[in-house]
Length: 443
Image (cartoon, rainbow, N blue to C red; front, side, top):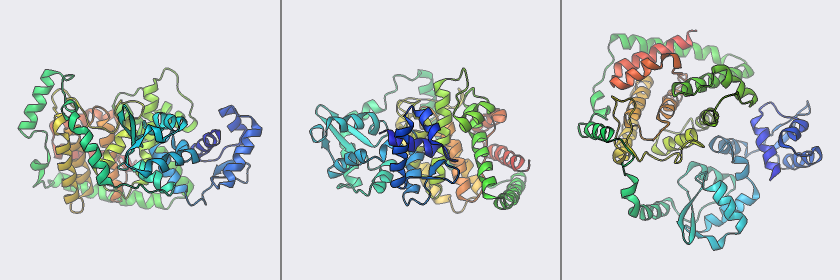
């Protein structure tokens, strides 16, 4: 519906937008624009500002839910809150397995083009076509809450269904025929020797005096800058936060080879104007990083889990990866001399990481905690691509939960960053991170 396209545009323009601008950008007649705006206003989704622009209605009780949906499905959230999509969800909530015959042609089209790519609905059979609501997804939980719906089946029932389907495919899920034989040998040997595990080796870790001094200095810098930042005007704080986001997005993508300059990223995120000679993938990487940061702001109170990590990967690799949010099915490495966990052992290693995190999150210094999680995550390298970007987001999720300022790993120092990961040396990595953090916030 065009009305919800207008809503999406208004949500993307935080300062508001004029009816004329909407008409020009979407190619809708000004008469229809005013009709749609009136409807959105009546639904308390948008409101007219004193200067004649239309902006998000911040008094709407469902605003926070819509923002959460936007963070998880930036390009489709406006389609997910429509009455038509609610009708689809109502049918999907009725039973665990919904056959094609229970759905209209229009509903099947929306499921195939919107719900399945967004991981809201799973097609568990092709002949005959049978669909299932993915109630284990955070996006689905938020959608059901927004539409005031509840599934008539439980999570264990859903998981049992998926388990029964996967039994016949388990072998193919771990095939390694696409992997280089030398990489397979290297990774298998590393796993057998436990060299893809950092956690047992740092059980009795204690920072030396140099690191202890840096930790103390980082604590002091964090307090001083936080006091400075919190005393600023709200508009200034918002502008500085947006500036940090743009700088972070530039650096985290540049480390992975994105060719957009810092100016390109800054201008694109402000205006939406695409730079010349930039690939679609690079634009997707930029948009995905922005949505991932928004998502984590909404999830700030949520602890790290396999589910959260998969959701982050789904956001980071949307429109890039064929299977975003799914663990790798082939062998890979950080650098040629840095083997990672074989694909068939990823779940086991990830569970060990999450268990360690839960056991140590309240007793370990936030910087040490964040660095260990990041290093172990990168040593596992659980996804086919996007591991670095997800890993760096995890560092900041942990730091911000502990009331620490976020860290930006700078592209100009990426060789030091990679060297610390390759050496698998906790002291070296901590030294790199702490000096980076201190220098950044003393600027």
